[in-house]
Amino acid sequence: MNAVAKKHRSLPAAPAPPKKPKRGLLFFIALCSILAVLAAWKGADFLDLDEDGNLQLSSSREDQMQQRLKRLNQCEQYVLLAKFNGFYPCYSCGVDTTVFLHAGEVWKYGITIQGEKGRYRNWLTSLGLRYRVQYRGSIQECLRQETLKIYQYALLPENTIRTQPLIRPPGNKADL
Amino acid sequence: MYAPFVISSIVEDNPVGDKIDAHNVVLLEQLLNMNLQLSSYGTALMSIAVVFIGTVPENVIHQEEVTYAAGKKELYLQVRLPYTALLQATEPEVLSLMAKKYLQTLGDLAIKESAIDFAWERLVLDVQRLFAAAGLIA
Image (tube, rainbow over all chains, first blue to last red; front, top):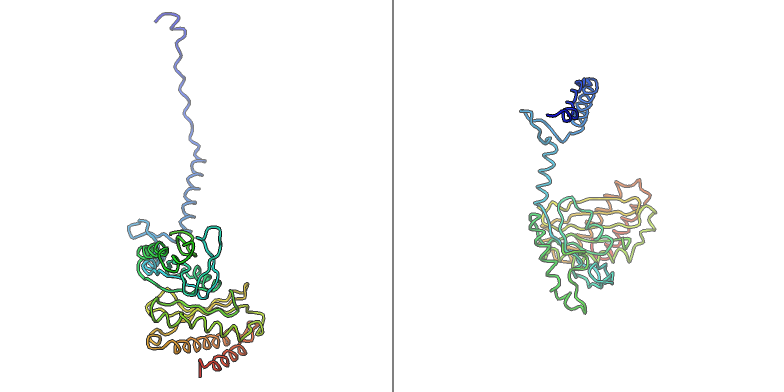
């Protein structure tokens, strides 16, 4: 190595003085973390520990889940029928917002499980409709039945007789 | 609700359901609306809806209930008709069953809801007279 090179050789960096760990800060963070976990744990009444110390759903949450699964197997596919001859809301009539239905004609197909009373109740009391149970079973099968009926509605005589047949029942906003 | 007295139904899609909803639901509703003025019994109620449940007994989705919406002044009642009786009954007999159940439900409410500003007893009496005059109850 020549003299010039020696002159411009970079000097090894002086080792940085070891940082003293800020013990106070670390302790504070650790304490906060523990407190946060404890606080969350206290509020998490949906969790429990099993005998091996593993997390599991609390018994009340587990019961709630089983109830929900049971309800999904107690599904109902229904049809809402017009009670009177008259005009009813229509979601499939293009620019028209109502359609004339004769008493007994289909307004909507739907499904429901236990505890979902709110949706069809308003239709019964505010639109002049009646409710018929067409199928009972699991939610998957109810959805299948509903789909079949919504699509096949287009072929019903009450629909084909119209000058402009509807693609789906007047009360169904979409195919599903 | 579209009328002071609303009647509707939740039934099986079978001949038993026909006995309730093919004609009787509308007959009962028209009878009440054409002969009674709900507003003459007080200000607490603008409408009373009664939905008759005519489903098989093992059905758990539809239960009897009473809901009062104070804001809208609407009373919603869901009442069950005995399915075994429906199986045997003719359509006119089912109308009579519906009238009896309607009257019984209003009578029960008249006892429970006496605090509400509404002349329950007078309404029950008038409904009873109306149904009797129509030959629906003895």
